Amino acid sequence: MPMRQRLIVLVGTLILATIPATIPASWAVADQNAGVALLIGNAAYPDADAPLTEPVTDARAFADELRRHGFDVTIAENVKKAAMQHALDQFYGKINSSSTALIFFSGFGIQSNRQSYMIPLDAQIWNESDVRRDGFSLDNVLAQMTNRGAPVKIAIIDASRRNPFERRFRSVSAGLAAITAPRGTVVMTSAPPDTVVDTSPPVFMTELLGELKAPDATIEQIFNRTRMDVSRDTKTQQVPWFSSSLDSDVTLGSASHPAVATAAGHATPAAQTTVAAAKPATATPANSSASSTASSTASSQPVDKPATSSPDPEAQARHDYVLTEEAGTRQGWNDFVVKYPSGYYHDLAEQQIAKLPPDADNNTASVDAAAPSDLAGFYRRGQHRAMNGDYNLALGDFDEVIRRDPNHAGALNNRCWVRALVGKLQDAMKDCNAALQIAPNYPDALDSRGFVNLKLGKLSAAISDYNATLALDPKHASALYGRGIAKQRSGDSSGAKSDIDAAKAAQWNIADEFASYGIK
Image 1 (tube, rainbow, N blue to C red):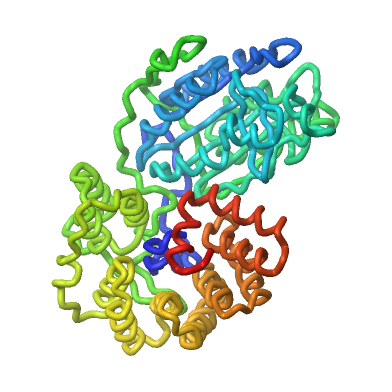
Image 2: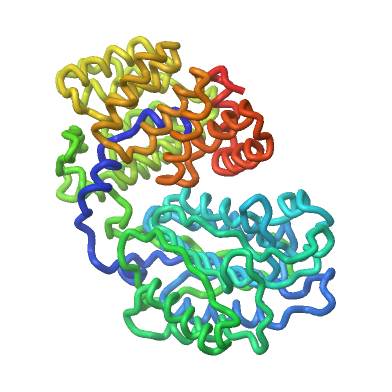
C-alpha cells in the first residue's frame, strides 16, 4: 500500500477485527436513497457466428426490477470500447459515500493473469495481452467503485460463455477468474471460476430476476437462492458462484421515487447521458469504524476520536469531507485526517491525498505547529512527519508514543517501517516482532517485517511474511510487490512476474514507491 496509507495504521482497523460495529442489522437502499447501477448488455459481437440472445433483453428486464427498488439506472447496449469506458466513467461519477453501487455485465468475458475482463464489441483479441489492452478488468472496476467511496458494491457478471476470441490463443476456454471481493462487496457470476456454461434455454437471469421480487430478502439470500434454483433447473450442469465481503445484511428495499433508466445503445459515447447523482443519505456506512472507535482493543491501542460538537460524528465528518473536497488542497486534506484520525472518511481522505499532484500545496505547518501533549497527538504528528519524509522527527514522535504505551502496535509497526527506511534493520525487526506479538494478525506489521527481511536479504523469511500478509489481505499491493521481488531474487521469474503484475493492477505506482526505497 502507499506509504502514506501504511503509516496511517489507525486503531479503527484493529478494533474492527475484535469488536463488532454498532450498525443497523439491515442496510436498505431505500433508506439511503442512493442506489446507482450500470447495466451493460453486449450481444452483437462481429467476431461471433451470431448475436447472443440474452444480454440486451436481460439488461432491460434487470433495469425494470432495479428501478422498482429505487435505483438510478443506466443501460449500455452493444457498446464498443470508447462507449463502454464513457458509461463506466459516468457511473463512477455518480457514486458517493452513501451509494449502493451495482454493476451488471452480460456478454463475453475472458480471464487473464487471474483477473476477469469484460469484452466490448470492437475488441481486437488475438493473444492474451490483447485481452488486457481491450477488455475491462472487473477488479479495476470494483477498485474504482471503492475509491469513489461506495460502502456497498454489487457486481453481477453473466459472461462465463465460450467466446470467439479465446480459441485464437487457448485450446480450452478458461471461463472467469476467481474474484476476491473488496470489503463491502458481493460478486455473483453465472458459473464458478474457470468454468464455462452452455445451457439452453438460459436460466441464470430468469431465476435471479424472480428471486429479486422476494420481499425483504438480503442480497446474499437472493444470490444463494438463485444459485440453488439454477442448479436445480439444470440438474447441476450450471451452478452460479458468488463471493461476499459485506459487513452487514443488505436489502435492496423499495424506493418511493424510482429513477428513470437511460439507454446507451448504438449511439455515440456522448449520447450515454445519465441522471443526476442521488442525494447523500444520513445512514452510517456499514464499513465505517466510527461507531467502534469509542472502545479500546485487547492490545491496549489508544483510540483517537474526532473532536466535534455534532451529535452525529459521522454526519459531521461527511460534511467536512465535502467541504475539503471542494477546496481540493493538500493542506486541507492533511488538516482533515488530523481532525478525523480514523474511520471511513479518514480513509477516503488518505486516498485523495495520494491522488494530489506533486506541485500541490504541501504546507504542513498546522501539523507540526501543534505541540502535542497527549499520546494520540504524538502519534498523528509522527505519521504526518513520516509521510513527508521527516523520518528522524517521526521516529522521535513514535518513540514518545511507545514510551507512554509500550503495547501500541500501530506505533511499533510505524517505527519498524521508518527504521527500515533509514537502514536500522535490526532495530526495525525488533519493532515488527513486538507489534506482531501484540497483534498477531496485523497485515501491515507482517508486510513491514517482510520488507525488513527483504532488505536483509532473507528471501525465504520475506516470502513467508508476505504469504501471511496476503492470506489476510489478498490484494495487499506492497506485499504482492515485495513477494514478487523476493521471488525474482530467488530465481522464480514466473512467480515474480505474476506477483508484480498483480501488485501493479492493485496500485499503479507501486514500482515507483519501492524504487524510492531503493528496491527494484
